[in-house]
Amino acid sequence: MKPERAVLPGLSLSFVIAIISQLINSYLIKGIGAPTVALLIGILLGNTIIRQPKWQSGTAWSEKRLLEYSVLLLGATITFQTIQELRLTGIVFIVMQMAITICGAMLLGKLLHFSEGMTLLMAGGNAVCGSSAIAAISPVIEARDEDKRLAVTLVNLMGTVLMLTLPIISLLAFHHNNFLRGAIIGGTVQSVGQVIASATMVNQATTTYATLFKILRIIMLVVVVLIFSQLHQHHQSAKGIESTVENSWRRALPWYVVGFIILCALNSWFHFNGTISGIAHGLSGWCEVTALAAIGLRLNFAAFVKAGKKLALYGSSILIVQVVSALILITVLL
Image 1 (tube, rainbow, N blue to C red):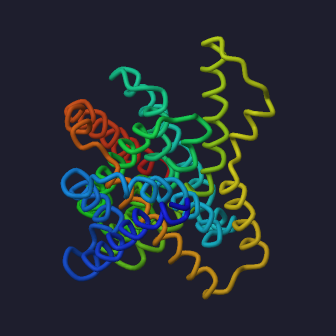
Image 2 (cartoon, rainbow, N blue to C red):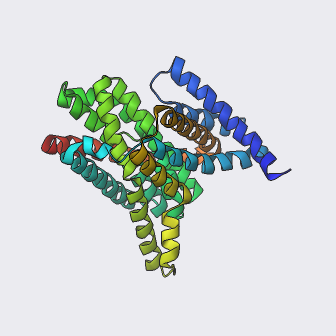
Image 3 (cartoon, one colour):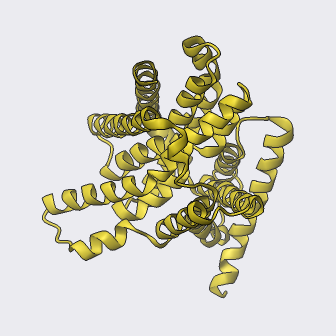
């Protein structure tokens, strides 16, 4: 069988699950997010009836490539001018919130004896933008596929919890202040879709502010990728594994991260019209949902359950760190 034909069955299956997930999210369980639905359906099918070898090539390709395309296309939907709309205090809040999330995830991961790869993926996925951040970080830290799948699954489940609870938490903490409610939702919730879904439960003004704060986190993706690359290189050197600066920088900027920067810069300078940005946003979303369906199909649920208590403790601890730090920083800074 030709390579492209070998990919088609698994890719087609993942895309069908993505379509079903979009329909479920739109008409049956509104707000939970198509990516989360696709992941759960994939896990269910991949650990029961879809276990034949013929699906493996396509799901492996979808898991890797479609998340990369999702990151690339995301660049055409944001601009650097976003930073100006949040004022200096808003920027300081996001930078500090991301730093606390990353440090907290790394410290907790070390205490719970997770691998370097899993710890960094959880740190980046929660601090930046969920699955897309994990996709961008994975190659620069040479993460194992199993760590990547576990991190994507846990981060999406954590994002769902925050998506559903933050509208209530933000109301109790900040009453009807739309800017502050947008700050906590946009500054903590993992994926773009989950941020929008969560903020929509409040009102349109909160959705606008939450999206701006989220976009600033996405812009910081490149910085996080570079920092994590250097951390990985330091760990490798400590183990006596030789690496060159050239290789480090090459891995630190995968082609799709470079593309993300270029599209973001072009959109900042020339301002793509709404049609182009809308198409890029739609394609990015479909790529993400299809990739998460493939990740679900390839996830070893038995291994996930085996580490269940440990993963649950890790995820819930990071959630507490994120929400508590956001509440404190917003109160002090904003």
